[in-house]
Length: 71
Image 1: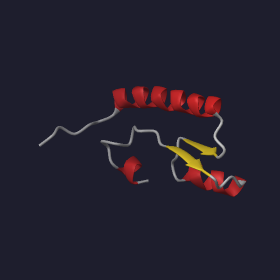
Image 2: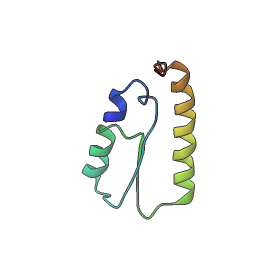
Image 3: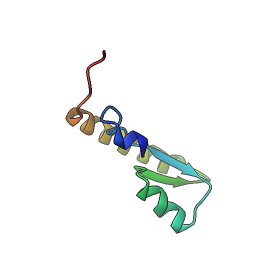
Protein backbone atom coordinates (compact mmCIF):
# COMPACT_ATOMS: atom_id res chain seq x y z
CA UNK A 1 0.00 0.00 0.00
CA UNK A 2 2.82 2.39 0.86
CA UNK A 3 4.51 1.70 -2.48
CA UNK A 4 1.27 2.43 -4.36
CA UNK A 5 0.87 5.80 -2.63
CA UNK A 6 4.35 7.05 -3.59
CA UNK A 7 4.59 8.25 -7.22
CA UNK A 8 8.22 7.12 -7.37
CA UNK A 9 7.31 3.50 -6.53
CA UNK A 10 3.65 3.19 -7.59
CA UNK A 11 4.64 1.51 -10.87
CA UNK A 12 6.51 -1.34 -9.15
CA UNK A 13 4.46 -4.57 -9.19
CA UNK A 14 4.81 -6.59 -5.98
CA UNK A 15 4.53 -10.38 -5.92
CA UNK A 16 3.31 -12.03 -2.72
CA UNK A 17 4.62 -15.47 -1.81
CA UNK A 18 2.86 -16.99 1.17
CA UNK A 19 1.95 -20.24 2.87
CA UNK A 20 -1.53 -18.78 3.47
CA UNK A 21 -3.46 -20.37 0.63
CA UNK A 22 -7.09 -19.97 1.65
CA UNK A 23 -9.20 -18.09 -0.91
CA UNK A 24 -9.82 -15.26 1.58
CA UNK A 25 -6.04 -14.88 2.10
CA UNK A 26 -5.46 -14.61 -1.62
CA UNK A 27 -8.32 -12.13 -2.01
CA UNK A 28 -6.98 -9.97 0.83
CA UNK A 29 -3.54 -9.95 -0.76
CA UNK A 30 -4.87 -8.89 -4.14
CA UNK A 31 -7.08 -6.24 -2.53
CA UNK A 32 -4.01 -4.94 -0.68
CA UNK A 33 -2.41 -4.26 -4.06
CA UNK A 34 -0.20 -7.25 -4.78
CA UNK A 35 0.28 -7.84 -8.52
CA UNK A 36 0.14 -11.60 -7.99
CA UNK A 37 -0.35 -13.77 -4.89
CA UNK A 38 1.51 -17.09 -5.12
CA UNK A 39 1.20 -19.83 -2.55
CA UNK A 40 3.76 -22.33 -1.33
CA UNK A 41 4.98 -24.72 -2.48
CA UNK A 42 6.02 -22.53 -5.38
CA UNK A 43 5.89 -24.01 -8.86
CA UNK A 44 8.86 -22.67 -10.79
CA UNK A 45 6.87 -22.19 -14.00
CA UNK A 46 4.11 -20.33 -12.13
CA UNK A 47 6.69 -18.08 -10.46
CA UNK A 48 8.49 -17.39 -13.74
CA UNK A 49 5.21 -16.51 -15.48
CA UNK A 50 4.28 -14.14 -12.64
CA UNK A 51 7.75 -12.59 -12.73
CA UNK A 52 7.58 -12.12 -16.52
CA UNK A 53 4.18 -10.44 -16.14
CA UNK A 54 5.46 -8.20 -13.36
CA UNK A 55 8.48 -7.13 -15.39
CA UNK A 56 6.33 -6.36 -18.43
CA UNK A 57 3.92 -4.35 -16.29
CA UNK A 58 6.74 -2.49 -14.54
CA UNK A 59 8.29 -1.59 -17.88
CA UNK A 60 4.96 -0.33 -19.26
CA UNK A 61 4.03 1.58 -16.12
CA UNK A 62 7.52 3.03 -15.68
CA UNK A 63 7.15 4.68 -19.07
CA UNK A 64 4.01 6.43 -17.76
CA UNK A 65 5.25 7.10 -14.22
CA UNK A 66 5.97 10.55 -12.89
CA UNK A 67 9.30 10.16 -11.17
CA UNK A 68 10.43 13.15 -9.12
CA UNK A 69 13.83 14.66 -9.82
CA UNK A 70 16.50 14.02 -7.16
CA UNK A 71 17.28 16.94 -4.87
